[in-house]
Image 1 (cartoon, helix red, strand yellow):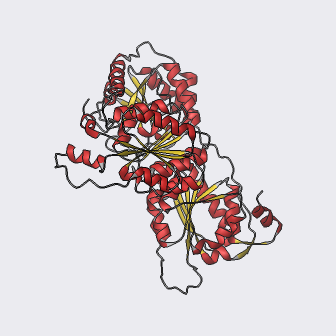
Image 2 (cartoon, rainbow, N blue to C red; image 1 turned 180 degrees about the vertical axis):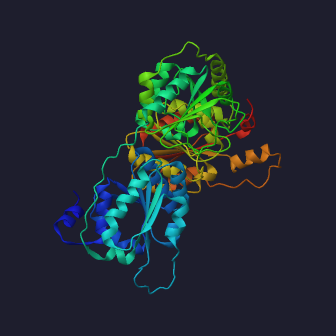
Image 3 (cartoon, rainbow, N blue to C red; image 1 turned 30 degrees about the vertical axis):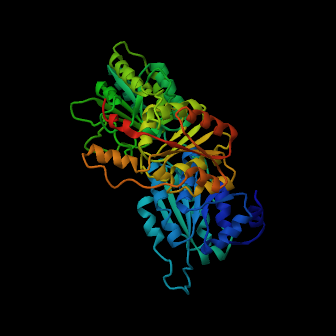
Amino acid sequence: MSALSEKAATQGPAKASDLMIEALEREGVEYIFGIPGEENLDLLESLRHSKIKLIITRHEQGAGFMAATVGRLTGKLGVCLSTLGPGATNFMTAAAYAQLGAMPMMMITGQKPIKTSKQARFQIIDVVDMMGPVTKYTQQIVHGANIPSAVREAVRLAEEERPGAVHLELPEDIADEQVDKPFFFNPEAARRPAAEEKAIRRAVAMIEAAERPLLLVGAGANRKRTSNMLTQFVEQTGIPFICTQMGKGVIDERHDQYMGTAALSANDSVHDAVAAADLIINVGHDVIEKPPFFMSSDGFKVLHISFASAEVDSIYFPQLEVVGDIANAVWQINESITVQQQWDFTTFRDVQKKVESHTTEKSDDPRFPLCPQRLVADVRAAMPEDGIICLDNGMYKIWFARNYKAYQPNTILLDNALATMGAGLPSAIGAAFVYPERKILAICGDGGFMMNSQELETAVRTRRDVTTLLLRDDSYGMIRWKQDEAGFQDWGLEFGNPDFVAYAESYGANGYRVEKTDDLRAILESCLAQGGVNLIECPIDYAENSSLAKK
């Protein structure tokens, strides 16, 4: 119990801000990321006496990305803090990032006094209403006695399937008020409902009746127990699998049955596997991700296995749904399924060879600046099995989704939901708080990096071991690729850059520059071994992008 909790337990009346921090302590919160303002000063004083660590960031957006990543990696609440007005509006992108990406995250914002006001409407906007479209729950606390129930309800909603963002607004006068200490709602472990037995029997019969079943692993399957059960399913049945970008690593992609990752919406070799299947076993489907297939009335059948029923639309209407805890559902299927003689995976093997050829092609290309295939190969060779790469948003994200084999769940953190720029470095810092013993690599384009590059100072100050691989092409490369694909003239997407090595060193980080192709792997391995905060500037040649949409 922290000093704050001991104090609250021995006194009758309690300060509302103390109750807020105690409620978060009871929920197991370890860190709060953010930038306090004058409206948060009571909460800040309460936090001073808490075992919860305050991590000051250089921008609220970075704080939100860090908190969301804590939620993504742990399944438990990540928390961030800001003042009212501009502090709260700076949370909006991170809120959408967590909400669309199914990451449990709580934002706490301050507000001017609601009982009396001496500053008219200065800095005041309706933050609660603003947060509505990008959260699962948003609430202004109007009485200190309501804090325990408000926190418990917010955490419950943030963490239960489908996880997402929540928001609590604590006005300045409410934080300062004294109230009789209310009853606290201790968090209880809640078990997800299990899929019904009849649905499991029908699912087993559907798989056994197929001739060319194919497993598709989606974002909702990125859980440790689900990973174990799906690995057992693949090894027990021999059924091949593909994954979405946010389903990477759920099953070790070195597995003989791995057919590739759906990195593009169309014209990717992995889609040939989908076309060859007569049954798609779609586990952890999330409509947020671009669909790797389009259903038709006379095409393959789809078995939907997920925490929630399918959101039906014109391209997704599964013939059978197994709704409930995914790991338990797959375990039940494993207990009763039998390998069938009519299963024929010959066509899938042809696809696998083509995908593997794409993955290894040009992985040893000596050209400089580096081509994407060589870049991905060198990063994979340098990273340990449990190392985590955190990708910002750009062309490299597609190359890593296709060519980087993930060996464990949540070892490649990319955003294929909001797909926002600027999240790569903050998410790596968040990951380094969760797993300080593991190797963490942020991979950013020069455009995305400069959106939150100031968080290098946060990493240095908090002594995180984080390396950033900065890919320099002096332009917004993904939009430039789209511009070319659409037949438009190359125009309007280039910019200048600072001296990134000197920039990193100005924060107290180590800066390195790749000057020939063979430098990259050696510098990466050295940075990962020495720890600390490192930045590696690496020029990249995106001429290969023209081949992405060609099978």
